[in-house]
Image (cartoon, rainbow, N blue to C red; front, side, top):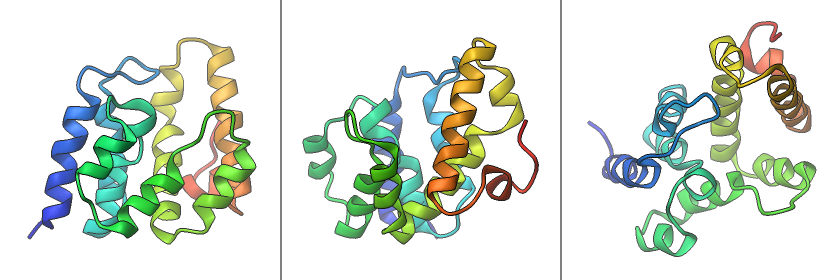
Length: 154
């Protein structure tokens, strides 16, 4: 049986990502769904489907708070949300402090580094820039992108 918070999160995410596309031109909700399916348990899945709603979706912090998700879910989403002009080191440090956020961030990096997604980037410069970002994120999380993906990422 699926948790009520997860069902609610899917509904919120569908609204927040409606009409939004990722760097590859695909519906943004597809990325969030793949990340959701890559983690275990309803709490992690709830965070996963919502992990980018504040950065890439059309929902505000106040609107998300109004959805009344449990505090630990909100803390994990907050940990995963990068602030304007925030150094990556600070962002990843915040993620490291939250077990749910860390699990979801690893799944997020795995999805972002899928070869088909990298190949669909608009140009080689963008692909290399994003790959450097993903590798640096993994390093700041105490691992490597290859280890997170379980394969060599090119």
